[in-house]
Length: 144
Image 1 (cartoon, one colour):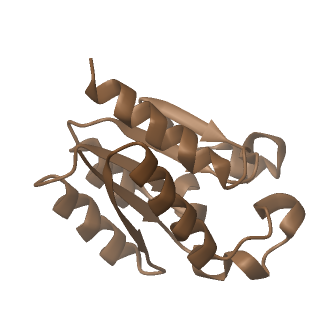
Image 2 (cartoon, rainbow, N blue to C red):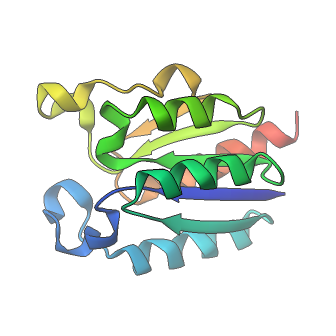
């Protein structure tokens, strides 16, 4: 089982962002945890992060050819990028939308997700552990 984790804009500075909202871990620490969880769940994962929207779209297209599941945290692009939405819409594998902070309880503009209706599951406000929940969901879905 192959899963790709697509982290978007500003997640590269995760450790510098408000720890009350984002859990105080760096992107490197988060990716290390994700790789450990994937190993425990007997799946392979590839973590990617970019601040370039076009590159993110390209990774969505790339996933069409090999991924059995996709975990997407586009960051702020979640709220307005129809280019990313269109790229994710092409997927035929489970998509889990993840947000470390609880976007539904933050600023009004963060409460809109243009990808929510594409997601088989949304994991919001569970900190870095939300990625584990997303991986567990994809692994369980693959058994159905």
